[in-house]
Image 1 (spheres, helix red, strand yellow):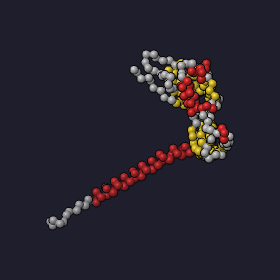
Image 2 (tube, rainbow, N blue to C red):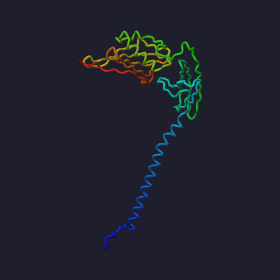
Image 3 (tube, one colour):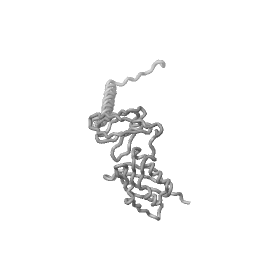
Image 4 (tube, rainbow, N blue to C red):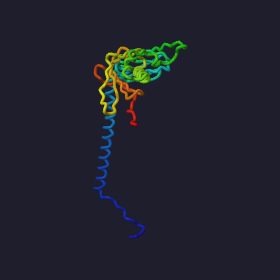
Length: 242
């Protein structure tokens, strides 16, 4: 044999047909997987579209911070100046804040429909123009909480958490007669706790305050009807052993 020549292997026709068949099967399987993945992505989106409604909000001021909330739920920011959001059917409160002024509206979302609403933010006098703070809220009954050993710093922290829960709140009323100390094992390091009912404007919640000492606390709010937790804030840690 000439050393410059080489033998080129060529598979028999049967093997070539087998390779081609396997390749076609692989392409078909890949095609089916792509279709299945697309369906998996599309079906939830279609279901969401069919079972929800759309809220479209406009405001009179382009810098208005827009939020929305359901009863017994914390407000969620949805945009600035204008917003469009898809929601489950139900009743919601829409609020807008701009330079210390705000406006609210109660709206109803229907399945498969678009609800339009507009918030008219009336400007406030420039001499009093400022963002709303916890100082604008009337707190009633906090003295009763303090009598259980909480410090004034913890009371201020608790008030700030209530304001964080609902920035539009006007009055927070703690039912002094409902305050109860939680059980605690004195043989292990465990937090103190107080439970009570509290009204945030016209909605009443079950509240729990948990703390180890006079430095920090955790505030938790639950619905009266179902006991579902709607808010929690703060952090505590056990005192370090000496």
